[in-house]
Length: 278
Ligand code: C2E
Ligand code: CA
Ligand code: CA
Ligand code: CA
Image 1 (cartoon, rainbow, N blue to C red):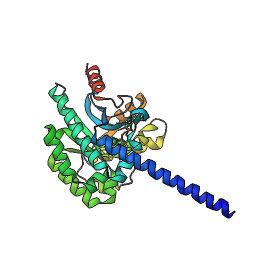
Image 2: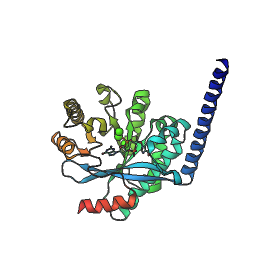
Image 3: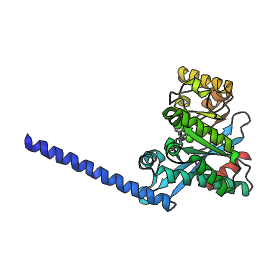
Image 4: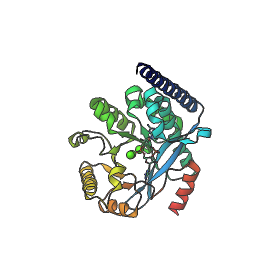
């Protein structure tokens, strides 16, 4: 029994050791990918539910790992957050997304608001205002065309810091949206104090619209509350016409999801835009 116990322990520690090595090598590979421009952005449209026009676009990061294929952000953003690599990654995303929108505008595309996701780690561990300023200056993009999507976690962790940074962002003229709204349990009274422009209703509430009456009630309550607070509302994860119609009926401002368009590489997005607006 003693023998197997020790073997068991050795096996366990070797496994942990191997995991640590794999993690370390993935971390190095990600670092290399950031430095060598191996990350890309895909772009997903948002439409205005009032008139059906394209209202904006969200940049989502992808990592092409060569023979391993494309890795989704869910599989490397947490690692990037734990290791601090989210800081250079986040700066790259801000800069690249701003440059892309300015390039589209220079090429004759009607200006759209470009939304960029930012992790709460970026807010607490780097000077976001400086990073945003740098991206705007470098790209020449009108700051009103830049939107930052952030989750409630930052605001829950450190509300005072969150509010201060939000104020600074508003002073720059950029737009701010609370992403995944409804999943973070932030108090509704707190919402009133936040200098934000938009709420994005999390896709988990949109998914069962038309099937689950509880979700219908939640979504309609979020929209009513937001409008009373003068906030605009976006629904994410819209996949069916039924969901679209219900949201339209509730006076939701914008919709985003596979029904309208998937996240696409830049050239594909340009074609999509031409098709959609013709
Ligand atoms: P998110 O910001 O909530 O983005 C929405 C996610 O849902 C995206 O996944 C998008 O591809 C997917 N999606 C969009 N429409 C639909 C739909 O109709 N149905 C379904 N089932 N899914 C839909 P993605 O691109 O894998 O991104 C996952 C998360 O990773 C994002 O969630 C965001 O939190 C994070 N992320 C992505 N890019 C960045 C980035 O540049 N920086 C940071 N910090 N986080 C990022
Ligand atoms: Ca988002
Ligand atoms: Ca979201
Ligand atoms: Ca989400």
